Length: 166
Ligand SMILES: CC(C)(COP(=O)(O)OP(=O)(O)OC[C@H]1O[C@@H](n2cnc3c(N)ncnc32)[C@H](O)[C@@H]1OP(=O)(O)O)[C@@H](O)C(=O)NCCC(=O)NCCS
Image 1 (tube, rainbow, N blue to C red):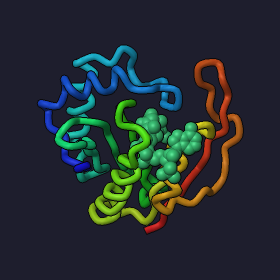
Image 2 (tube, rainbow, N blue to C red; image 1 turned 135 degrees about the horizontal axis):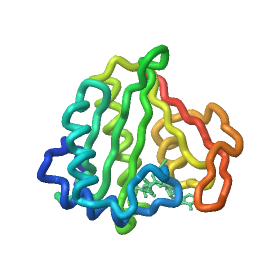
Image 3 (cartoon, rainbow, N blue to C red; image 1 turned 30 degrees about the vertical axis):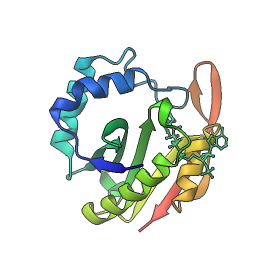
């Protein structure tokens, strides 16, 4: 299986919109538009193309040449500026094959090389065991919880804080 992180381009909008519209949202922010339209995809790609390499790294996760997911590391500002937050998602058909573990490995190397950061933070809703495992397999250390920080679809979850140092 060939797992490549490649830069986004504006022509990705249709495939991106399809991917995001069908994504499992159980453990994702309610800010993600639903339905996720072509216009949503175009607007997000405009933001990405402006920010890329400056305040963040954004990549399409390509598996054997197909768009399977998305991964980003976004640098924070103010006194938090040498920290950055990682985020990722993968279409359901690609789960549990080690793909995001490999994507996070590649992404951390790129982010530590290209951004002026000394740590990467991962924030995961506690029941999202697969995501926590992906971070742990990449050397992220659990640093604590924010108790009952998340309200999602009628449920309340702790937020797990993970950190990886350069
Ligand atoms: C989280 C997500 C990115 C994981 O991607 P993935 O490519 O399937 O992850 P990997 O296959 O690399 O690793 C998953 C690990 O979690 C484990 N896992 C999967 N489901 C699990 C579960 N319900 N309970 C415990 N462990 C689980 C797998 O066994 C594997 O660990 P292992 O290698 O030790 O066996 C994917 O499920 C996803 O996109 N979910 C929806 C969006 C999302 O939640 N994004 C993260 C927000 S923080």
